[in-house]
Image (cartoon, rainbow, N blue to C red; front, side, top):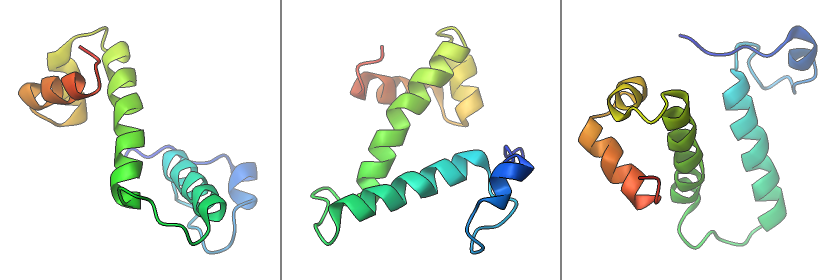
Length: 97
């Protein structure tokens, strides 16, 4: 696993229920989802929480990977572990072509 680890000082601040091996990305998602749920309370997310989180994460992920690979779709698709045609479809959906 190539997960980014939290610095020891940051990991020490985490609630006991969280694993010391939790990646920085995973912790960021956990913290953000907790904050979102606290903000909305019992209100329902119209599209469903799962779909909303995926939508919110996918666009910046694609944008950053494309930037990192300097617009090379073949390399970006390989890094993402998806087919280049799938990448192009997703880029078109988010207006990133």
